[in-house]
Image 1 (cartoon, rainbow, N blue to C red):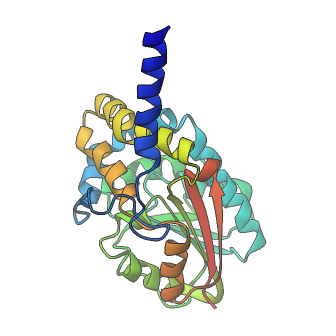
Image 2: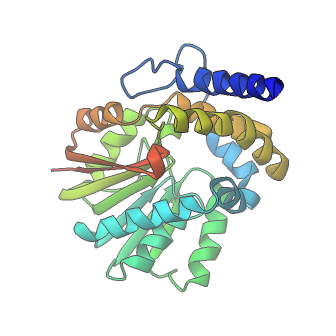
Length: 269
């Protein structure tokens, strides 16, 4: 009995060590002094390496919750003009396909990404859905979008803004291509506020996720990169301020699944 109590105490102390970690920036990057932000300049090459198992790993590592998050964003789109839609850092195109499924009145979809192999998978999925005449994909840099000013009604980016070399510049570019009454939606990971849930989340994110992701994908670096970019990127109020600095207004944030992820929506006008 004494041994069991001792083990419980050790487990509790371990969890509290994770839960009590200081957030160095107000609702921003976690453990900024201890976790170096990884280089993002070649992140598209990393995504190309894991492209063949990317969708499978998303389902496994999130237990399918990531699909629910994308569906939530697609449903929120109904509140805004969305005749022409941009999906930046579209990857294998799950978000833009979910948007078309739940908003059949979308006339034109554009997907842009720097990872060519991810786009190849996305193209096959779009073809299989019979949407090749309505969704076009192209290689492109989020900080220099190959689009005209005020040409997009609704822009979105899921789990991609933190991978931009200059996120502020990418946000400014997204605002540039939006119409005056257009909107941007950003779906991104965040850190839960509840201490106990945050402890469990960080334990999974730092230890189990890189292990499982590395085994299945054969590229453990990619999944160490994932948790490091999440913990060193802004979220919550700090990310809302970043959007505001890029010129967006009427910014709203909606935490998902106890704050594991958040949807941010702002107006370009």
